[in-house]
Length: 478
Image (cartoon, rainbow, N blue to C red; front, top):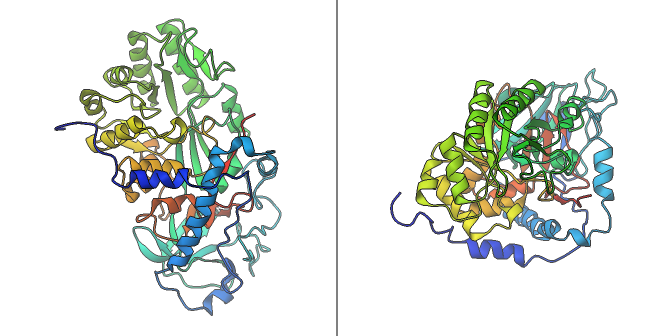
């Protein structure tokens, strides 16, 4: 890189972040944004679908303006936690599964009647009206990167994309004039610190990566407690005795103290045997693992096919992490990074987490510079520290303010983490899970549309937006 590495922020940043400051302060509320109308129901039988003309690939600006009006009202949720009198909406949503799903994430034996707005879920086939049992076809949507096409779904998987013949048995999902993208992947959450899998799913997240939790999370995941999300797990963060986070928020088992290199390497083996997908190490100020121990942890983790992410917020520690061989940073550092540190992350990963730390100037400048030098940028919210379940509009806006273009933000939320973590999600293609968002406009022109999905399907099951409105919900920590 030449010149000042601290690149100028996106030129519309002041105006963009001003939209956050000017939003009305309001208590927690239900915000409903139905996809369909009485004239165009969301779910239709095959016979109804065959009688209707195919829609064009354009949609009116009024729909987009309406969704952005909802967003402007809803953004205040994330910063008005104190105004919430209760968390009954969250509690009810978390305790009762989405229609058509059991609490373990399995398909219920009862017929699914879930719908958005006035649409109805019915079928004339032998499935008895259960869309999860009959073939579903999303018709007439605009698949980002492909164009107008139908999507056939069976057993939660995409089976065909293209011009698909109508059959009387299918459950037709009307998507004319809507854009279709994969459901999101949040690469930094703490769901044992703040448990909200159903609100996250309703808000557009299909997969989450938990980056510090007590060992019990492995059994909880096995028991289906995070359904319908797919959850990748690190287990507890490895730390020195008395090191971060064991003396603060993570005192309840979110950190694992390792007295020496042998204990740290044994911890990696233990995590791998439990089903961890990665290892997280602490490089926070205070007591910390030695460089020798960190290097040994990284070597052993790689031998077990586990990636290693470092918790570090400063320049010197980030440089050390890169030099020792980590695969990525759990956060965008808050302290301005030197040109040498930025260059060291060419080819490594950085999880955004801008909103959780206030979307500061230095952090956003760092993210933009890291992106420019070739770092892999992964969307992540640090949910648990942040409190917006689902796709966070402020995180999206902050990433754009840092200089990422809307298509790059979309990639950081979907295809990039899918490739990085080796997931089948994050793409709309035959053989992939039928986990998609239906949007009112083109997210490659306006990434904020990702935070206002008009419908969310995870593994072919329509998620209940009734309590969420598709814009994220402010969750009050216990």
